[in-house]
Amino acid sequence: MTDTSYRTQTRIVHAGYDPTSHHGAVNPPVYHASTIAFPTVADLKAGQARRLDGVYYGRYGTPTTQALDAAVADLEGGRWCVSVGSGMAAVSCALMALLKAGDHLLMVDSVYWPTRSLCDTLLRDMGVRTTYYDPQIGDDIADLIEPQTRVVFTESPGSLTFEMQDIPAITAAAHTAGALVVLDNTWASPLLFRPFDHGVDLSVQAATKYIVGHSDAMLGTITMTDRALFERVKAMAGQIGHAVGADEAYLGLRGLRTLGARLRQHEAHALTVARWLQDRSEVARVLHPALPEDPGHALWKRDFSGASGLFGVLLKPGPTPEAMAAMLDGLRLFHMGFSWGGYESLILDTTASITRTVSPWTHDGPSLRLHIGLEDPTDLIADLEAGFGRMGGR
Ligand SMILES: *Cc1c(COP(=O)(O)O)cnc(C)c1O
Image (cartoon, rainbow, N blue to C red):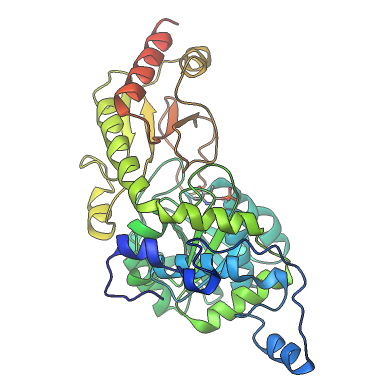
């Protein structure tokens, strides 16, 4: 761990940073390794004993993945981090480490859709029961906790719809009932929300997004403060065969070094575009918790130290699918793509993708998700303005 008296921006640069142990090269070498060779019986035994923390077998980690793990754990405020091959691998590995047949899981209704699908198929088939709950439930979560409830899964703000959750209220209720809380912290990155200060037990990141930051690698992380939880997750990752590619770990660590600078620009540019959208006649509501008009703003202000570049837009009813396509197809700077968090702006029509089973999603116009990259927001706004022009022309 870096000295905890250092401020975050300093720790981003120095967490897991150790040039003197590799000839002074600033970045750690990329260890491509499956076999770790031991010279003596005693060395092999010692390696085996330190399997979960040491360098013993490629699947369990190398100095490259360990540098990434140390940096993410440090920045997120945890003690240990287990990196895996993607964000979904992190979600599934965390849940499989904590749940067994007969257990009950409480899952937020605004969760990333592939997580929902994991619960509704694989976990169900393995005997884990899932109950979905409203993202705005707060401490009423206590009413849904059953004797078999082992995990409350949270994601704040929610995917596509950006509802904020009262994480401290939920963790307090869960812990009273003996359940653990998992948070998908991808929107906030390791920097904007401190999960362990708010009672979270396991924090999951799709490092693919802001940590990698350049849309060129898949990576996931699971961070915790508790040693016993680390051992469970690390053992599960090994058993179900998660391994992180050497180059992916390197790209994650390299991306992380500039995360603070990038996020400040994502935040500022996204707010500029979001405010411009609020004034457009086509827009019913912008879904962005850093806007004072957002229903989640008070929670965001209380718990978060900033915002990232991803938000939603609800359009007024009217545009046909053809009008939406006319807007989207002609955009020059925004491309359509799912995995956000890179340096480039993205847009996605989410109208048919919002899934709710607790209370119905009632907005009846189209919806969009925008990721605002590092471009000049004036150019992005001009691109969107021309898009609204094409939409209106239909
Ligand atoms: C993208 C994403 C994931 C999955 O990450 P992958 O690396 O694509 O598997 C999980 N949770 C959230 C909130 C995401 O946005």
